[in-house]
Amino acid sequence: MKVFDRLEELLDAGDLQCALAEARALTGQIERRSNVVSGAIDDFLIDLMTLAFVAEAFGNHLADAARKLARRRLSKVRLLTLN
Image (cartoon, rainbow, N blue to C red; front, side, top):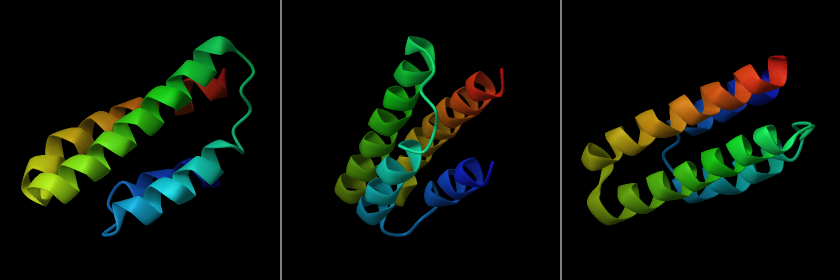
């Protein structure tokens, strides 16, 4: 569960490019025991990349929606790995 707590913290990081690099390493520690889990992890990383782009291009004000989506995807990954 520490992996998920750290991933949650990364969503609020100031430097989202560094956060993305760390998130990639952390998600590698999550067991991808099914295609559903793998897909959910990939979706989360895509959302985090989108968040980093939006924050860089438009500022944090517009990044709130992307951050919210990434949090929801992370919650989905967490739920899928608990089963």
